[in-house]
Image (cartoon, one colour):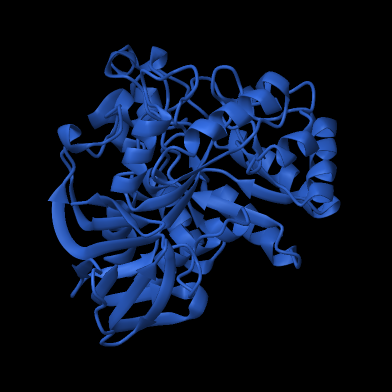
Length: 425
């Protein structure tokens, strides 16, 4: 295959140039240059005016498989990822049953190999994600676990966190943390504030998040463990992460921003109801701006979707009884272009670093760059195309998104995984 005349953005190789060609051979990047001669039998993609970049890596997604396949499967999740420009996805461990043993991990990974993108699977930190007993981390890592997380629930036992961190440091593994102390969560999925009050609810206080972040980042520096703080939502959290990262000389501390937390506020709940219910909750405009500032100055080094599909029936329940979460793989790029690049907070070069390079590096994946000999995992997108998200166009099995009907800018045209076109608009 030859991709012709694109603006190639490859931050890992310090490339940001117009009118470049990319040749792929045998599933790998063969060469990048100008006016490459077309070889016999090569497929040609004309990409003039479009961006070609390393395929996106999402380190935080829920494919609900096994156990909740009415919401999503490995296959539909992979289809949604490809439509969003993602060629690598790390799935969370809160399946049913939880991924806390080698047998279930290997079963998932064997099925994942049949899909057209790279699906990685995180294992739980604790058995059954119950927060009481550490999983056999070394065995799980040797069996293919990408990292460890009890995402969906916090690990409250401080001594257990220390043990997990010491073992993760020994194994050079990543620990990802969902930071919500239940002592401060009165109703999940909505911020403690004016909107919750108007709905007669107390909501989830920001202290639930930032107090646990303070604890875990302190422990990460003490133990030498790699810690990824998931879906940061509060301005105090950003400030704490910034402070600890300034003390971090070993590159241990990482943090995610989701498209919904840098795009929306708690006011969206009044308009969209349970479609805007998410853990941690959408907060205030000041919090949204703090998340954006954290992305701009590098405090938050990852953009991760927290793609969380639910059925329409579940989301149509009364707000307090509806599950938290929203799908996000197919709108992530457009939300980033619309709300980060267009207003001037990030350049496309910086955006691709946070969506491709940094997440791949954190997990040690063979992804995130377009060096010769690297896998031909490429996203081609038009940063200027305007479109409106429609439920019937989503490839996910679910459509629980507050962005349905919203006008966006920036659209994936092609996704290429190992030299094969796995999505084209």
